[in-house]
Length: 335
Ligand code: ISE
Image 1 (spheres, rainbow, N blue to C red):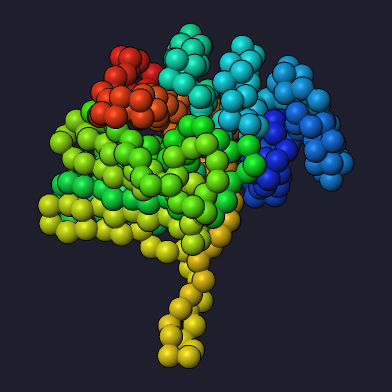
Image 2: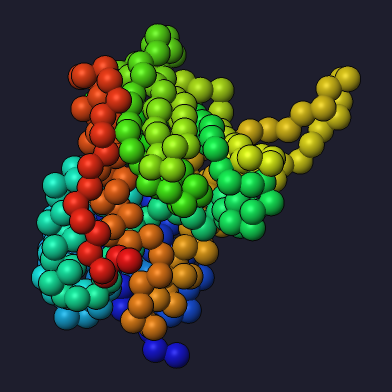
């Protein structure tokens, strides 16, 4: 089978895991190069696999040895690398968010449209989680009737030290912004952030917790509770209420203990462990897309919609009102 030669930009925790799974679990790909802003981090990974390391992501993108690019660097750097890879007409897997603003996503979309083919997959990993996929299947089957309400929660124990500002939305809630429209098969009408009294265990200059309220074109409602730091565990909850019944996201498998008149199981604490299997499935899917020359996962349009919604939410923090989610016309490439 043909192997696609991949370069990975960003050798932090998630980048290293992606190198490992591309190398060991995806038969269609071979990682040939890595880069990182801290070149030492890239050199370490390169040494482990006997591959090339670059100090600059741009050098990796331009290398004739690299056929497809994974962007797993810091969030604000995504847009620059994606645009550079598109100049070279190379397939890109970009971790979420696609960019920091909808305007930057529009630049990416227009470059992709000019190429005339989907080149980008966005790392909305939860679409590959068995629990979320089963919720989607049940809604689609009609068993719980047409969906009316989606309740969700995204609770974190901790974040990296540079976590600040609007990241609870652009980095954390962005997962639910993609997941909710995917599950409901609907588009957003309005978006609003409600602030909540600050959790004293969460330090930093951002709203924590916060509540996101969304209305959809079909008249459904979505609420998302976001705790960025200081929660009791890493806990992802989702419940979809339909006209005839409801579905709940299952907890990840854990051994149940019955002792001292209690029945209990441990919750996770680290986000990077919660969707391990989903990441594997996601990259196996991407590997197939690369050899088939057809991207089937979440695409640049999905990345754009999440960012338009995030922008509306950030605006609503100032206005303290629901803001309209206004999108550009959807090009036929994404229909
Ligand atoms: C991180 O970037 C993620 O993508 C995780 O899924 C999320 O839970 C975490 O809060 C983010 O920092």
